[in-house]
Length: 612
View 1 (tube, rainbow, N blue to C red):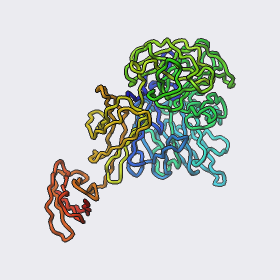
View 2: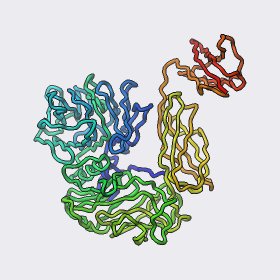
View 3: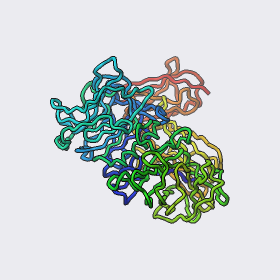
View 4: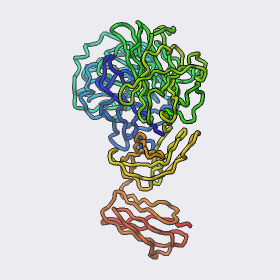
């Protein structure tokens, strides 16, 4: 049951290597920031403590205080989350970094305002006395809700250079989300130019400053906060070309179900076409100087080396979010024993949306964590007659090993506009293409335990699971072992609990062990447990046998006593270690008791109910 596809970041700008950024555009060298609500968000409950950069740069955002934490709202936008800012004091900050001191840029946003207000601040790099770039909006007329002037470039507060377009209804938080980009003094909305002017040369503005990048706050100023939500922020350190911009726009449009007003080339995200909304990437060409010929994005499929990619032509693909596994799969051509549940669909079109042919392409699959692979077992499945079924199409052989976990089908000619594709195996024993974990989550409960839930779509020779925990995401300890179903062709749901979680930030991951002893790890998820000062925690309550007693912050020494409802000391076995304790109440009569904890400088008490 090997199982967890990974996204790697590599240095790439030209077409000689696959690009791993949003939509398959850019890598760490030029995609200097990539924050998306579905990746790298750390929460305490629903409060966002950290938002980690997925660009390959360490430009991770964090909230400066508990009161300033925005809220994660899952599934709010086409089943993707948003991060909601309250317009009062919510903000996240990325520490100062040279990669974020930009002299030119392309910035992409997906978000919306909850209400118009003066100085709805999206982000700024720097302060009012030393800015580098920024974006915020103002509402000047309460009768027009909401109305904005967009500040794109500025030098200082007294000589700000406003890119002020005509008044327009930008978006409302409850029903319409849009995204926009701006490069130099051009503002694009939904793929079309909304405003542009001649503006001063951007190099007049400060090239560097030592200040953070503020998200949801302008320059750290009081009252300059965003009242609204953000789902994704993408920053490049120079303008990308027109073909790349079209691809990124289509990636965002599909992911968040946002209609483009121009260059809406990827239509497989529409409901009628099957909602292939996920991890959209593409190649394309406007001219010999504006092109993008090698792309992978965050998914496992890379497409490049189109033999006849012409001007104004694009090939864009996305998938249905099916699992990367084959156990229990059906709809198989003769001779194929299994195929992935994940299916991709393509648009191969001109800039005008007409079907075209970019020629043969190389298709490379990364089979990391997919178990053993015999390259001759692999088959590319293409729905050639476009009827939504693979069983009546001839599988494509000829895969070659491309190094490491990469396997390539060279010069594929069957990839045509509107067709679907996936990967299959003719030998499930040698090349099982096993199932991927559907989900793994960690949630802090009211009693300060951590609930861990995960699901599998199907299992093959799966012996057991082990939940692991780490304080630093490096040194892992076992928390709990859970027996697995072994073999299953249906969805299986599992749950466990960490009764002794670490204080503050910690990480959890799932280790899956097969019957042959081979193991696979899931991606790590993070949780944060915030406890009030001098808090006494007792669980479980009601108690049956063992009671856990903890004090925050952990003192060096504690003494524990148990009293009955008459105020009399009750004798019960107590084990104290590392500032916490466990009381054995299994021999006590049912009823109410008071747990008293004495530390060096305080006495804490809490009621406990014993019920057998």
